[in-house]
Length: 128
Image (cartoon, rainbow, N blue to C red; front, side, top):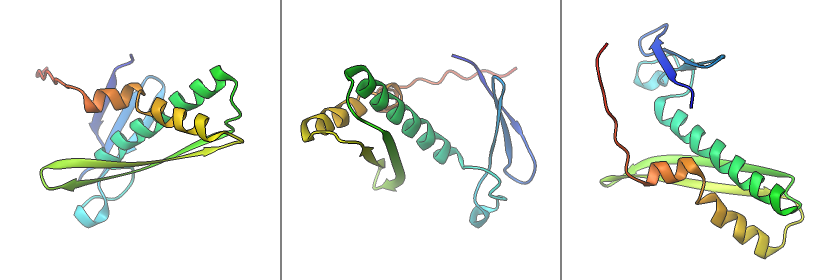
């Protein structure tokens, strides 16, 4: 896996994100003092989960030769009581049977980012 480097960017909360040859921007919404020049950190996490979910479902359907033409994943997260709750809505396009649709929803639960977020995570921090 490539390393991710995040460096202070423009504005109060702006961040420059570099992953290999890709450059992204992170920020906070205006309502909390940012410039909204990019997604906030939680939105970036949701984007990772949505991307992995869509890729995993499509890869499985392709391997099975199922007529899945597109996958759309919509995610929203909210703090409820003492835990974060992620609502994930998966739209499957194509002439799929109900059995195939059900199996693809099961496969969505197996995407690597889903497993990471629902498993144990350790973060080891150092200072350079």
